[in-house]
Structures are given as structure tokens and as C-alpha cells.
Image 1 (cartoon, rainbow, N blue to C red):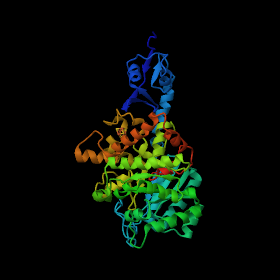
Image 2: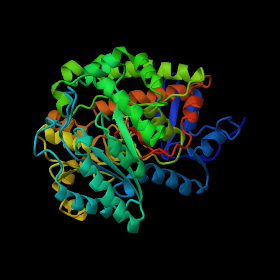
Image 3: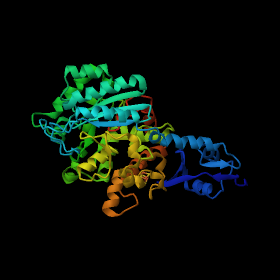
Image 4: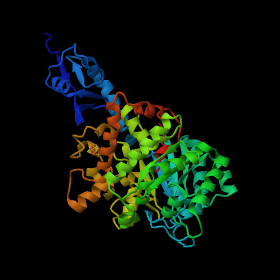
Length: 489
Ligand code: SF4
């Protein structure tokens, strides 16, 4: 009889999924073990002849006696997973106006009527914001213009793009511009400018016409018709790969998973982001009519994904952007630039929001929270240098929520190496309930999504892993936040 091998367990997390035990290393490698093998492993009874011994050593879940070669490898894996939050602020969101002609009930930014004065970012703010952007040490910068309807203040966007491009002649950073817009207000001049400056356009398409128009009512006619026309016009001018769309899911959307996917296919998109409703801003006040539980979202999501996988099996390429991101976090050691899935919250470290009124916020959610009257996460004014914000009271408020490693609930979670954190939600939950363990929708949603993904990985007969891997090829997409379809691999 073989005697047990001389090995030590390396730090790992585990979770029982069905009949199997999922083991996850500190660097994010994973293995599935049946119960006998799992208990043999953790009690030091594994022999070198065991069929899983070499595999567990290779995945840095075990180390052979006196072997230290794992150290630099695991250190590099951990560094890579946290790196997006350590390289300086890469995403700068500029809110150029609050004006908008839509009446979306889920709007989160207290939109204002098109003809109202005082809700555009003043021209005097352009130079200080450009200074703040270049104070970031990140070599890769994404500048995303948002509204309201951002194209109602296109002149301001143009001023930014020209000032940033001019400054970048010396700075030589890698810069992407993204305009988030309904695309209703495109003109030949705007498209010409977008072409000249290699600007990406990101729009909202919530599904088939009836659903889109219910979600995004426009007093002057069909929002859907104008958005679809805008997508086609923009594609003709700047190219198909420069125009992306994302969907916001309301309660109305939940009964139409296949129809929403079909709408994206019929519009020529090969990527869809099934984005749940954010709990902040206006949406929380209308939550009863529009909202749904995490369980309802997950049921919808899985039905939609069944269809997405079915389409891929039949030779139709369409990816779901968030499933791709989660798969990338699990299957690849390479860092993703999507700040919501970086273990250190991106707030203030990899994203900043410059509001139309000259205030700077830690994140988009922080700005939405301010619309609810909670202004604690306002960093300061755009006229102050970034360095001055290091001592901001906003960081004191949110300090405990920034890193998920030390959070009760997260610290022992098997999915921690792949997951992120939503510090704004944590702050709200803590204030409302005094709860310190994770109890929010972010955690419950991600717990469900990771269990869903690992269910496929555990099943050797499933072809979903191969489908997900086919989505991970390098795409060269822009790095954005609001739309993971724009996140570079
Ligand atoms: S947020 Fe939830 S799913 Fe994510 S690491 Fe923390 S406990 Fe796990």
C-alpha cells in the first residue's frame, strides 16, 4: 500500500457544488474533486500515485515538500487580478449635460428638459477636467461622455476631445473616446468629427420596439425607430465595430429573453449585455413597478443564456458580454479592465466621474447616490488637483468597503479571486440595516452567476466551456465601464 505523499496544502477556498467540491487557489486556479478525493487531499492522505496529485500541484493547490517554485507564480497571478485598480485612474466619465428628451422611468440622473438652462457643463470646466485626466498616471485612458443626452451638448464634447488630443501630443497616452447616447441627435458634422477622432458610440437598445418604447418613452414619437436609425447611420459613418449597444432590463423585459436576444441579432450585433436595473437614483423610487428580485433576474438570465448557447451551437455567433467577462476572470490569468470585477473597488482608484456642475464623484453610483440626497461620496471640485482628494472625507466614509479580501462573507468565499465589490451598495446596506456581512444584491447576483458558470465547468460533457473560450479571443475593443462589450480582453 502506498504511503501518503509529503505535501502541504497551499491556501485555498472551497465550495460544495452538487456532488463535487470546488477548490480555488489564491491565484484563481480551480479544480473539482469528488468527496473521497477532497477529504483525502485536505487530511494529507493523498499519494503521489493518485490521479489527481500532479494536477493539484500544477494548479497550485498543493506544494511538494521544500518546493518554493510556486511563490513567484502565485504572486504574479494575484498581482494580475488586482492590477487594474493599481495602475491609476483609467476611466474618466464626463457628464456633459443633464438635459434629455426622454422620460425613462428608470433614469438615474435626474434628467432635465431639453430647453432648461444651467444643466450643461460650463466651458470653464473643460481645462481643469483635462488637467485632472492627465494627472492620472494610467498610460491607458478611456474618456466616456455621458448625459442626460450627451449629444445635446456635443459642442462641449468636441472641446474636450480637441483639448485632450492636443495635450496628448506630448503625453503620448493610449486614449479612447466613447460617447454614450441615444444616437437620436446625430448629424453629418457630428459623425464626421467622430470619424476624425476615432470615437466609439455606445447606445441603449432595450429589446423589440414595443418593449424599448415602453422602457424609454419619447413624447415626440418612437424612441426605438430613432435609435435603430441612429445605429445604422452611425455604423455607415464610423464602422460597425465602433457602435455598441446595451440593454437595461426592467420587469417588463423578464418575459422576453429570446425576443431581446433576437432583437440584437436582427440589428447585426454579435454581443449583448443583459444588464440588470441599478438600485440607485430614480430607479429605487420606481422599484415596485420596474424592479425584480435577484432570483427573478437569474431565472431570466439563464433562460436567455440557454438561447444564446443554442444559437452558438447552431453556428450563430453571439456572446453575452458579462458571461464572457466572468469566464475570463475564471479561465484566464490575464487582468480584465472592468472595474466592477476587480477585487479592489474601482471607485476613485480606476474611475472618476466629473459631474456637469463641477463636482467630482468616486463612481457613477456615487453620483446617483447624490441624486438621492446622499452626498458623502463627493470627492471635491474639478478645480482641485487629484492629489488633494487623497484626504477626502469620501474615502473615509467608504474605506471599509473598498477591498473585498477582508470583508465578512467575501473573505471565505470560494469565488473571491474572480469577484468584485460594490462599495456604494455596501455603504447603503450598512447604513440601513447595520449589517456587516454581505447581504446585498451585488453579492447574491454574483454568487448565482458564479455557481451557474462553475456548473458548466464541472460538467465535462458540457460544450459551454468551449463556447465561452471562443468568446475570449482578443478583440481590441475599447475599455469602458457602462458596457462590458467595450471592455478589452
Ligand atoms: S461579493 Fe459575494 S460572491 Fe462575491 S466574493 Fe463576496 S461573498 Fe463571494
